[in-house]
Length: 229
Length: 308
Image (cartoon, rainbow over all chains, first blue to last red):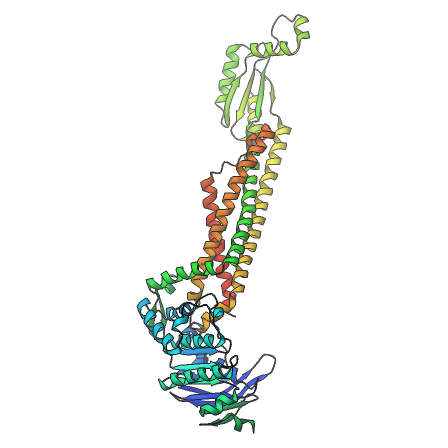
């Protein structure tokens, strides 16, 4: 489902963000990507949704070589993915309902379908009562749940989350993780970059560790502790 | 653009931009304007001001050109016949001149009337006891194209029975040179102001887009195509441009009427200073110009943010 083959990323200033990384993530997996700041976690995720291109190697998502995509095809790749960010990235001038509707409009969904899907996804993340609220009127946890709702509303096969709990307190973080697990149980592949050790230890999922751009550990049912050693 | 509206082919699939999506994109544009009210206000007022300045210069330039043209139009050739010419001879000559190409009209002056006026102005002449009217037959020849004045004057000179032909060459050439300067300055001024207006307006639009660059990035991340992001923003540009232009027109209309009335009141000499532009024409030109600059400004500026 997601394959990285000998992927290296080198920035113009000579910094190597990723160094010959190869890995495979199967359909329905739940994996954490861990590592300290600057280890290359975010870079790896950005390659998957073609926010950037590798200097070397191939990135394959859903059988499609992402590195070979034309710029005009990138939007169609992103529609197959749900992406969640640390800073939520909700459209500030739109309320929650409109934020979700926008993601559906983009794929050409019809109004009836839009109403149905938004209703379902808001129930799932527990934000039915917040549909008229603008992002700035919601708490951090609510905004992250809203961002997850937007990522889910298109029924993506892969959910990518970059530090989804970075701005949240431990209780809220745990709620968000529960939500991501629930999404995984329903069949989506979930990939979470984090350096929240408590969460990783508690979840006991596959752990992929990066250090200085190199893949140093790939362990099923791993913990954060091991990677410190 | 048409092809993108209809269908975008992606790896063998065709995703259609449906009618409801077009409706949605237009709705998006107006929601965008409403929710970014302050930026919309800033853009519209900038556009109104720059188009107002451009429009007022155009009106002044048209007025100045009209004024210069009307002054040239007032020039005429004075033709004086030899002493002792008869009524009949004068009529024949007048008719001959009338038939020349480039001559708009010929007016034969009345010797008696002029003599009476002359005597009234100079009572000393009357008392000196001049018994008969010494004035020659004279006529005023109006020329349809001022640039042919000299040629026509020469042709008239060749007619027998003509004593003097006064074409006011120096004055005419001075006024014509002035008219040329006025026209040149107007054209250069309008072009400079037009370029400035385009620059200011596209900058104003670029600023509104800059303020929304995060929004544009998010839209890209949720899989919106460039066209899906671009269309509402271009519609916003068109609305900003045409509303700004309409405000500029209203200001010009109110200000123009007031100023023209004031000028005519002070110096009737400047009564030829009018632009002959109908308000509806001016409104149409300004609104179309505003809309085009708005659309083009948005279109060009978005490209930068889409490719970031």
